[in-house]
Amino acid sequence: MITEVLQQVLNGLAIGSVYTLIAVGLTIVFGILGIAHFAHGSAAMSGGYLTFILTERLGLGFFPAMAVALIAGAALGVVLERLAYRPVRDAPQINAFIIALGLTMILEGGNLLLFGPDQVVIPTPYQRVYTVGGLVVAELRIQVMLTAALAVAAMAIFVSRTRAGRSIRAVAQNRQAAVLMGVNADAVATMVFALSSALGVIGGALVGALLAIAPGVGEGLVVKGFAVLILGGLGSIPGAIVGGLVLGVSEALAAGFISSAYKDVIAFLVMIGVLLVRPEGLLGKR
Image (cartoon, rainbow, N blue to C red):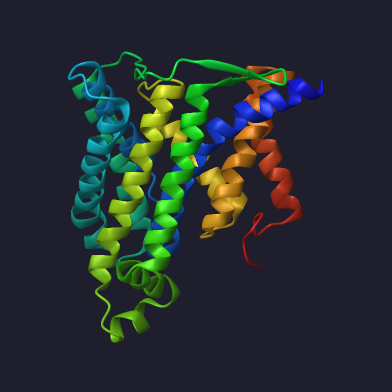
């Protein structure tokens, strides 16, 4: 019994790592710019599809293809911020909300038009399976968790140790004061969207390798991402990390011991239960 529980926890940590990447991307946009970027999941799927094209049809390795897709995803984030969100930055928040929903439909339609309706799996060389103490450990799941951890760590170092990162933190704390101190708020918004989209592309590529990419998957991912954002605490990056892992493990345990048909229901019940006890989220501030 204990081995079965540990096996499901291990499986849940892998998909929870993907949820964490998506949620951290949403968190930095929402926490710094106050924008609910609902198109984030669809942008992530665009990166996943591009990674598939580069690996399957052009023969690039998985990580080189992901790196190219990451750059393209960051560029897409810059375009979305400049053309869609910046013009309504000072407008009522409902404007940005409607634009985000419209961008989701546009990106989903674009993915369908460019890449087709078929479900695809990104090929990787990580096919080995290890058995450790009765636990079955797939090499691909290890790679997914390591990649997600390195991506989040790199983002944290960038935000905390670089001059650009200090500008981002200054705008997050007090935008008007940061502008008065000489910080370019427009450049910060561009960086935030580029960083968010890059994290999303990594998440999309890992989903494509671990599970599959298909039309509509991006919308489901962004719902999970916002659930994690709320579960961990609005604007809290550590909360997004913990919340993503909690949601992933909850889903895996529900699928393993109840039914895969109810895994989403059980996971969201866990989220609701946590919020009833801590309305501010696991690591949010009152």
